[in-house]
Every structure is written in C-alpha cells, then in structure tokens.
Image (cartoon, rainbow, N blue to C red; front, side, top):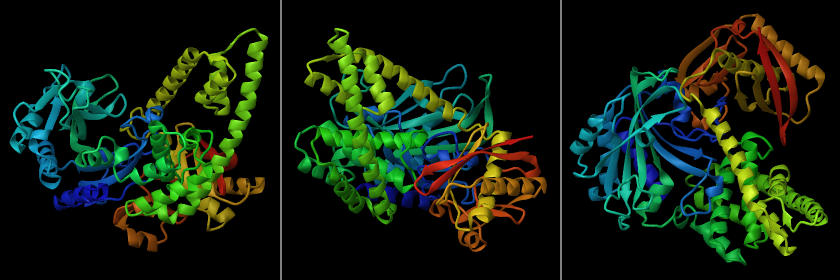
Length: 585
C-alpha cells in the first residue's frame, strides 16, 4: 500500500466517524513563537485544546507536515527523518477513551488489514499522582487486543504533557511486531531491539498540572492522536527503512546512479535533507543565520557536503529536485507550483556554501601552520569546533584535510565541545516549547493584535500589495516579515509608526465572527496560507482598518496595547523585509 493510499484511507475513515477533515498547517507556524517549525499535528490546534471553539466542530482529522530538528545529526541511519507527515484525529471535549481506542483498532485491523497478533499496546501503569489506566486497558481488551499484548509503563513512556505545566494525561501507544526474533525472554515494546515498532499514539488529556506540580481534573477532556505516515508505509510494505519506499526510492536510485563513491549513509542524508529543505522552502522558509533559517541552511549544506562525499556534480541538485517534484506532486501540489522558486533558493545556497568551503580551507591552512610552528602534529578540537561553528566548515572535512597533511585531529575535544553546544541548543528548543499548552500571556496577546495593525498600516504606507510573510512574537518584542522591494525610508517607518499609534489611541473595538472561507475572502479578509484554513473560519476585525482570518488571541480594544515603536527594519531574504518592534505602557 502506497503512502498516499494510507493517508487517504485514514482521512476517509475518520470522516466516516463524524470527523471534519481540516487542511495541514504550514511548516512555518503563523504567530507562534513556541517552536521554529510545526512539529506535531496538535501544535496548530493548541487554542482549541484549551477550550476555544473550533469552526469545524469537535471532531477533527488531518495530515500534518512536520519538521523536527533535534536529530539532524542522526539522519543517515535506517530510521531518522527531519521531515515527516503525521496523521491525526482529535476529540475536543467529545468522545474519549473507549471510542478513540475502538476506532484506532478498527482502522489498523480492518482498513489496513494488520493481523491482530502483530499488534501490542502500552498503557499508563499509574503512580502517586494519577491512577493506573485500567480504563484504557479494558477498552483494548473489549476492542480485540489479544491477551498478553497489553503492557503497563510509567510516565517516561505513557504520559504526555507539553512543557512543565498545563493540560496533560496518560497515553496509549500501539506497536507493530516486525517478526524479528525476540532479543530475550522479556522482549517487549519497551525494547530497542527492533522487534516492536511504535506506530500510533493516543493521548488522553484529562488532567491539568499546575506550577506547583499538583494534578487536577480538566473540565474539557480531549483526545489527541498521531500516526507517522513514513513509518507505517515502511512497515506495511515490508521494507527495512523509509528510504526503501516510493517516497524516497526514485531519488535514492538516481543518487546511486550519479555517485562515484558508494556510501549508503550519504545517499540517505542527501535524499532526506533535500526533501525536507524543499518542503520548508515551499512553505516560505529561507536560509539564514538565525532560528529556522539556520536550520534550513544546515540541512541544505549537509546535503551538499554529502553530495561531495559521493563525488556527485553539484549541478545535479536540480535534477534531484525535479525527480522529487514529479514523484510527490500528488501528495504535495505546492512542490510543482513552486518548483522554480525551490530550485532558485537551493542553487543560491549551494553556491554560497561552495564559497564557505573555500574560505574554510584557508582558515584550516592557517590553523595547521600555527600548530606546526608550535611543534605540534595535532589540530586542537577547539580549532575544529571554531571552523565548524564560525565558518560552517564541516568537521569531517577538517579531519580529511588533516589526514592529507599527515596530521592528527583532537576529535575527542571537538566532540565534547560539540556535545555541549548541542545540549545548549536542545535546552533552547525545550525552552521554546516550555508550557506549550499553557496559552498566551497578556503581553503576547497585545503583540498579536499589534501585528494586525502593523500589517494594515504598511498597506497604507507601502501599497495595497504589501502582505504579511511571517511573524514571531515573544514577551519582549514582535518580529514581522512582509514583502517589499526596498529598504524602508525613515519617513516611511515614522509614518507607519504614527498610523499604528493613532489606531491604538482611537481604542478601536476588536470583534470576531465565524463565516465560510469563501465569504471571508469576499469580505476582504486577509490571511496567510489560505489553503490551511477549514471551510468555516474565524475572522477578526479591528474597527474598519483591519480584517484578517486568524486563530487569535486578541485584545478587546486597541487601547489595551499601549504605545508602538519600530526598533529596526532590515532585510529578511530576497524581496522580504523585517520589522522588529516593541510595545509599552
């Protein structure tokens, strides 16, 4: 069964169970500072999991494009991916454990025809905070899971919470038995031996954990599920890795044809990172030295480095893109419509990286000569790390150059420095998602409304064709990207600032209404990524100066915002400018 068939079966099945099919949100979150990319199906639904009414109802299903970046350096093995697709279904205060588990069991055994003996499940074993989840276990028995195929684990395995406080609860995970021999008499889903592969996770949000670590029952219980499409495709096709499925195989085959050196890990890295980069670019991402732009740059450069390892002409990157577009256009039509844009971005970044490699080699030569003058035959790990961190020069290339010059490299020191750097980055990522479902603060709500005013003001100052291209909000500032072909003059910035403050002083009312997407567009409402919105949408209006499709949150009157001040205006990427602004009392 092909991936697109699994996706379609999933959506059709849950639609038959009363779920509304909603579009995938973009990989680049709109007005969400918590993460760099959309990392899970639940992420765009946070306001609704907190109790806000969803225009499409209380039962939802979708496929969600996702990017997770913690394991970039692991890509190249037989299972890690940075881009993947997650299938999900949600109950927003509607059904709970019994119906959720029964539907999951029916989809796996009836729609996907997985033999019940190949399925095992895990449930929460209970602790001093919350009781053993016998309800879920009984639901699985009633659905048809075989005796001896239900396992109980603790919070590390079967409990979900976003951050340190907020809505949370036990989950139940489903595992597929690959048929590989058991690693021991006690082999079970918690083993990493490869016999059991997790395929689905149903989260039952029924508790709230407060800042003091105390748990209480939620008034609205939700169900949030996630099923990885690439992994399920691999298992149902009996393949060893996702790279053996139709999602990657045409590109993997072409890379094998083009390569002059045979390295399976490098082939996988090129194929995976190229696909991930294409998906990010199609959703508006651009390479840069900060945040998600840095992640994209790293993906592209890692792919290019491994094309060099395979001794593939870098001009062939356009060939590989074309193969992906043709292969995936039914699943992701944007890849075809934005093909030229994707090629242009990737080729430009490829050319920049070639220059980086040239510059890095010069810096390496300086470091090598310094070591030799000091009577050392070894390149310090700190030098390797500096070349990597400052110049983007890959440590593997440093090591290869050292060997060519009959010198050693202190890779142990580099690994220690890199590990410390990686841990710091992961802590930063964790901080970005800390409190995930805890909601927006008062100051963030003010900033969110201010982005609408800024968007409207820019249209008056720069022209009606000016549109938002992205934003990021923290408790300290707002960042707003928009299309513009020139650096804003001081007069344009001052005029924009004056207009926003005038609207704030007028204390304009902020109103919200629901309507069909078609009616919203006809009414003049603006939005980014119109395709991501359901048929019924939420429209926020600020007086008669702004009308946008948006999920909120917003203040009730603009006077609550305070004063607005533009701190900086700069280039973000080609044709895109960026304003950084603050608000105060």
